Length: 277
Ligand SMILES: Nc1nc(=O)c2c([nH]1)NC[C@@H]1CN(c3ccc(C(=O)N[C@@H](CCC(=O)O)C(=O)O)cc3)CN21
Ligand SMILES: CC(C)C(=O)C(=O)O
Ligand SMILES: [Mg+2]
Picture 1 (cartoon, protein in one colour):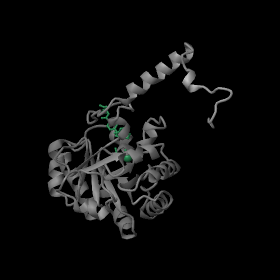
Picture 2: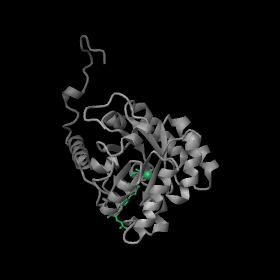
Picture 3: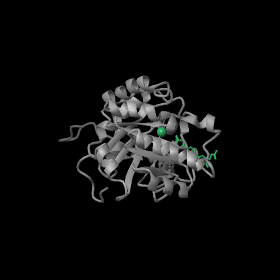
């Protein structure tokens, strides 16, 4: 939406209205300092349930709880003032029905201060999205590869290839018609992502989709090279901070063992005029 850092956060309505313009920039964040680094530089900050895999070592997003999303959401909120904050609804918190979904969405928003929630699913979640939107909960939808369905899908596979493309378009149309202000398209063929983007009236936010989407999202630890357990093809490493961190930790261990750290500059004399620390 803007090249220079934004001063105020866009509203969900502004995100919706940005369809077809300058691509929307989204990233995940899970902590205050990371949120501060991206505040106003990106349009949307997503407290993704990927936090379970990225920061907690879980094997999938299925074990992520409301309590985890609330704790990380509160941390991110403290670091943000000029980007829209969206919190993922965790597995099990919205699928049973609209009422349960509303209770949990309201809890996420009231306890974290987020402006919106995101949930996974297309046509089968349309009634729930409509219910939430009618009650003041802005909803970002997520179709294509929906990681909370990893076992039902049989892995983190490309979705919507061949004849399955029509069903994916119907999913994206359904969430738009239900009132979602944007939709994440994950791991779908580029040509399908372009078709969804041209046919669906809300912004498409791609991850493993296409540059033709109305915006892009990545997991921040992936693009910084901090998370290296697995690397989907759609991840570009804009930095290799993990390697640099490992080198720094090894250097520290070496200097401690060689007694070269701490050096004199890191230690304190018994008396020092004017020194208070
Ligand atoms: N660090 C991280 N990045 C993500 O993008 C991410 C998470 N965690 N956790 C939640 C979900 C899981 N996601 C994933 C996970 C794996 C692939 C993937 O492409 N995995 C394999 C292929 C597996 C297969 O084809 O069955 C790969 O090639 O790396 C894609 C999205 C996206 N989300
Ligand atoms: C990758 C994004 C879209 C997500 O859902 C997450 O980080 O959990
Ligand atoms: Mg997620």
